[in-house]
Image 1 (cartoon, rainbow, N blue to C red):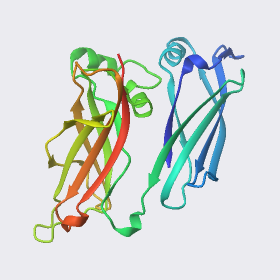
Image 2 (image 1 turned 30 degrees about the horizontal axis):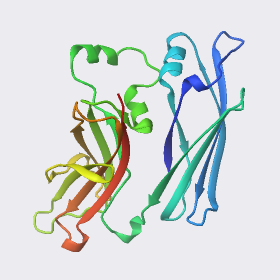
Image 3 (image 1 turned 180 degrees about the vertical axis):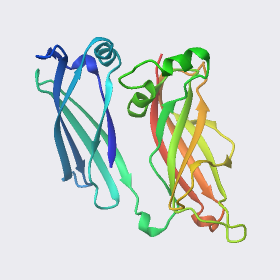
Length: 251
């Protein structure tokens, strides 16, 4: 399983290296815990990041995303914990999240975890910004932070596993609906519509996406997005699969 970890660049201590660059070094440990609280697997490594000028300023102001891959050998429910230590100051940061690994061999309709990122406005200013050199684009940080502002368009991406072709038409017949919750209460429900597929070369793993717009009047707080996929080619009791993810609205 690949996980994205957001690190606040301002919390790392950068020191001048011999070649004039600024350097920071940190240790990362990722642990997978079973439902009994015991460590199932663990991955650790030490990383060094070097930067200067505008890139260093970007890292300090916006932070950056680090990727870590942890093996999960069996389906089931787990908790993932990540701990990071700045080797210069010994300052420690941590994060945790519950995850569920489906058993895809059961040939049951399943959707993956959801990735969220902003949709950049298509205007002249934004098109020029694409060509500006960046250490990491804001959209990449979004996937790890899941923090958005009122009025933003937000793209959600996911994969669909074990979809079936209609026996008569020999085509897919998938629909999608999403819901947004706040404090456990449903505040928005989309219409059910056809799934927007990005890739459909392999029926065992279809890549899909959707987009929603945050109201300019939405209040800063924590929210939950639920995505529900229906495969109308299956029997009614097996048609539905859903997944959810939390996100934050900030000022």
